[in-house]
Length: 128
Image 1 (cartoon, one colour):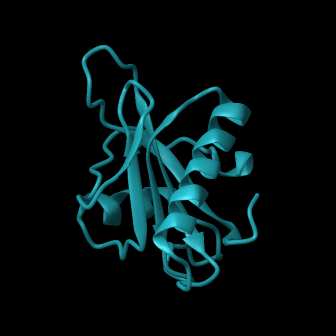
Image 2 (cartoon, one colour):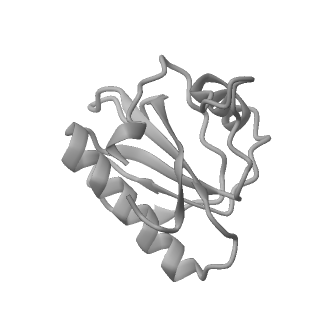
């Protein structure tokens, strides 16, 4: 875990393939504790989250998205709603502070476009 991410406020789910040679991909959405951070720090945080998922689950996320504090969708009981998070990200309604994607060669680049996750929800949050 990282002090810049709110504990228990991370959602990970299956995302569409971007390359015919890749199996299913994973998108990670993490809620920040504060918006006060520089792009370089946010990029480093995305890389840290990316590597944590690889280490814990042996899956490389295709996209890592950072969102403002208290904006990740939750159920009425207060649990993270990965399905709702996936939906608002897909609909372009998620307020994104910073995001990057990783191509199939493993090189990370900042992105400005929304990710459109489509397949089943996977629980990778405990790895973060």
